[in-house]
Image 1 (cartoon, rainbow, N blue to C red):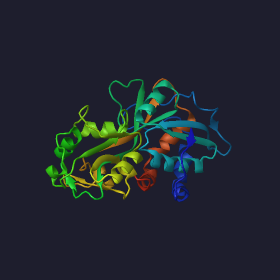
Image 2: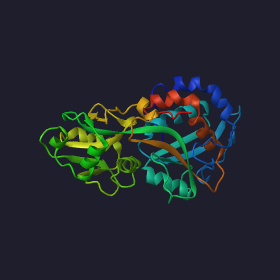
Image 3: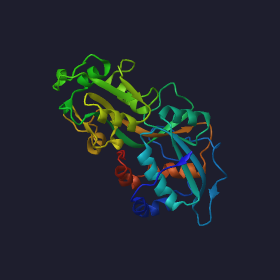
Image 4: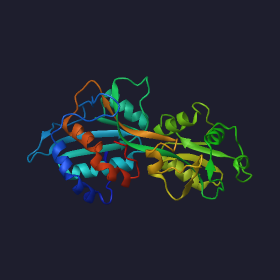
Length: 298
């Protein structure tokens, strides 16, 4: 496991939320927008409790979605700045692995960029942020807007040439994530192309998808709003830009939640509970936005 990376400006943000943290340091449960706040297995936690001065102590292991990396890094750094006796670790391994880790008790908190499926039982989810899934094309591509129906055709191979959607006479090259990815699951389920996609390339990280699209003038793919770079172009979908405002108000249709996944069979450790309470509070909305994700409407 590696520690979540440093994010510039976190110390300033953590100062603004110091009052909140003083209150959540002794908490033993987290708030959940989706159901009971039953939380993680304690199998990965060291001995925990309240350290001298009232701050929380202990180790919390997290892992899962690569799309949440920036926001988890920001939240973790701010929380540990106010709780120096807590060690939060995060392993970017994909949403499927995060859900499995929480289910099997090998992770204190699983991280997923999609909601749980009906078949994924024994765990609960807690939404801490939202994310738009941007449809990206190469910067040289003249296409600037696509409908959901056109995106579906490009993904399932019904549309094979860019000229069919107003672009150049060139073949469509579809690039996406590997099976089990939360980003892939979110894109396919929303667009309606589950088990239909015709991928030319599949990659195990959002960064790799962006790199592949930026390297091929005929490529298109999808990427988390929080991971967008100017090396690719995000098209509007039905005339609506993928942005924080349009995700939050629901007008941008290709969006998904970022969620904590926790085990229903065990009580949360004090450190894990305090971190989740902190991460789902209104006080960290600006911090989430600065990290490229979208704070959920409270």
